[in-house]
Image (tube, rainbow, N blue to C red; front, side):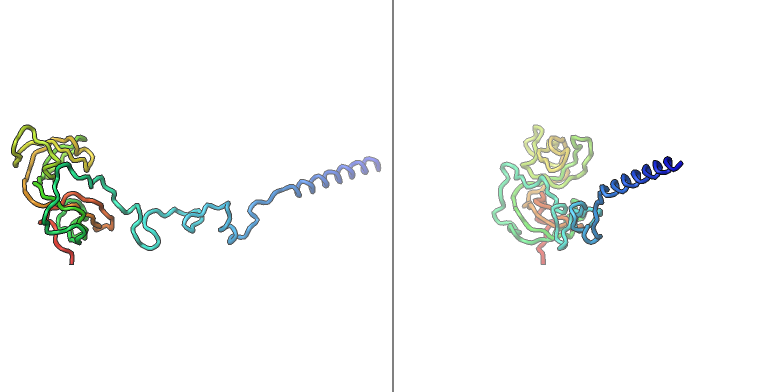
Length: 211
């Protein structure tokens, strides 16, 4: 009986020694205070936020970031379009836009970046993607091809060569209005605070001097 008790005691002691050794090998991860974790490489910190939403767009100074600028495909000057010799508004002049071609345009402040003498048209057409456009403003003479007509007038059928919007280039349309005038290319900030670059086109009658 005594011999069996000694064997049991020896086995129990051996088991306790093994258990103590395992606890010494356990690794402890991130033994840091919460304030230390903010500077740890183990934490994904974006814009001083821990596991928060990333901020995209406006910067901290309230100025416009890249996400707030509309980089349009406008700005390409059609071949043959001539600069105006004595336009009412010169390049660099500040103007107020009185037209409403697009949402949030009317009343916006802009800067003249180009002035050209031409004939300007509004055209109704069906885009190459199947979308109808009624009385679309504006197209200059150098952006449209006639369908065999020598003189383009109201009702004339044309092919649009401008590619400012999807489905515009190659669309067949009908002229709604015709006017000889000076047209302008303008940079402006719309009512939503977005910068629109090289907008084409605004007629002279659609602009007024900025005060």
